[in-house]
Length: 341
Image 1: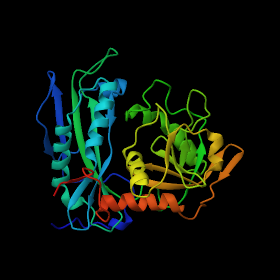
Image 2 (image 1 turned 90 degrees about the vertical axis):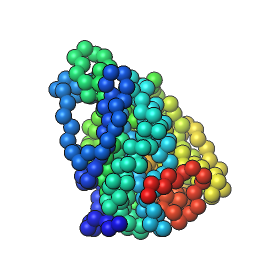
Image 3 (image 1 turned 135 degrees about the vertical axis):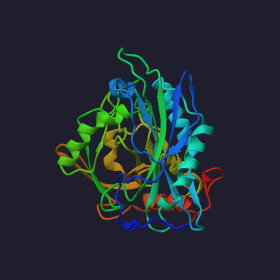
């Protein structure tokens, strides 16, 4: 199969419409049979639930061309489970794992020419999402919904590729205690936009959000989970009921323990402890791992010992191993890789 004529190595992290996308509608209490379409537009009521009350959630995962030429996805069953969790919290009809995986397989297969070749550093980003499409004027769940899935080829999430980034502690809160911080709701990301743009305008790549209850513990960036490495080589990840359960982080924790033999601590991380770590990184589907070189908290500047030029040794090896599993260079744990074609 011939790939699209794209300069894969020059791709950024942006939207490029591909040939096909998948959609299904929920009406009269059930999901109708989904199908592929070439139409990348959506028509719905001006009073749609998603427009009035932000009733929407989404997922993000990637498809890869492995060394043997096969096209695969990475642990998509966990994305299906997380989308179901988000849907339950927002009173959106759940999409079964079977339906989710069928939609994923069909969409990626139909866009196989858009999956970047092995070794280019680019991937096919896949975005499944759910939203209330039926009209609702009173504060209530929408009467109709759509499940959609599209994909787009992407390069590195942060401009300039994988190199240490500079972040700041945000004065704003990402998620309230007992709120929706642990689901992938669109409203969570809308709330982070202002703080994100403010950080960018001041020369930072990302925010570090602290817990809203006490503002003393590290949470996440709003788009990625944190990873810390102690001076004696332990991997530490923040634990909180308002942090999104990252599939990448969960996979990295397993790789750290089972592949690299590291001690892993999943616990609350006081911000005051951050200055004691040897390495800092953020992880997620889009970035995999991006190292952090500097963390600013108003007048306080924390320079991470691993520096602003390259990965620290532990996070670098972690990223290398996980991307090796995704690309087929390292043997994967059973069930992690789903072959599509």
